[in-house]
Image (cartoon, rainbow, N blue to C red):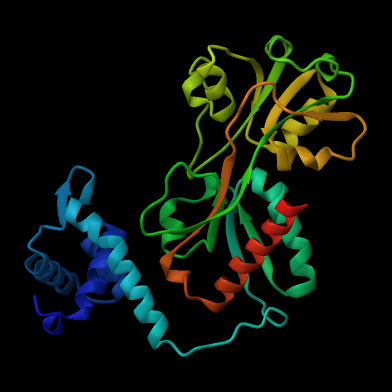
Amino acid sequence: MNIAKVDLNLLVYLDVLLREGSVTKAANQLSITQPAMSNGLKRLRDLFKDPLLVRTSDGMTPTKRALELQPTIRDVLSRLESSIQPETDFDPLTSERTFRIMTSDYAESTLLLELVGRLADLAPNITLDLITPSDVTFHDVEQGKVDMAINRFEELPLSFHQKVIWYDTFSCVMSSDHPLVAKCDLDSYLSAQHIWVSKTGFGVGVGIDPTEVQKLGWVDAELTKIGKQRAIRVFTRHYHAALQIAKTQKLIATLPSKAAKLFKDDPSVVVKEPPFDIPPIALKMAWSALLHHDAGHIWLRRLISDVANEMSDH
């Protein structure tokens, strides 16, 4: 194939088609007619010698070849868009930009709490719109409707850029008069009652089935490996709720250490190491290729990394 003979508009067509999964929606987004988009899809099929999109009961479904092409084409177009747009400086002191960040309660209570304080000094007119994981989808981030996602992810689309913000260990939080304060061994831990707290990924969550131990996450997965199971009495997706319940009730919250440190100065709370090994978890920042070269976005990513590094050092 001679690249000089390839119409770059076709790559734009393919990018939008794969994102929208519909000829009609893609045509509307590019402000062209549906026949023109259909003709573009035909030319793309001839160019790549592949159907690219196949009509199924779920709508227009991308082929394996199309899914392989998607991150490469998105990256190429993103770099091209960045190159031809006039370069503009980003001044955090005068910017009035709003950054929308999908974040878990864990990241919001730890990292974002510190970030807000830093922004007050460096970028006083910038606004943060913090969105919960159940409010958005991967598609929203991919399209740049959400500036970034900060959470713990089992997997991410190949088209996303990502960076590990930090690795965190686990701690047990309990009231200062809890029996485990005096003796926090495995048998005592298992005899106690517990609070489960977690929420990862995107989309609306579903209820927890306590019998499905393999789906309960890191803490219970490690207990299962040693043939043990804890008694969970409360399931929550909110770290502050778990901490408050642990503080006032005879329940143990086993959660990431940076969240546990929110109560480090509270005399009514005791934080201890778990009596069994739990591998560290990775908090990640993920964003769309559409925003990768944006000056303001680059500035915010660097600031978040700096804040995270300082918190880890402390």
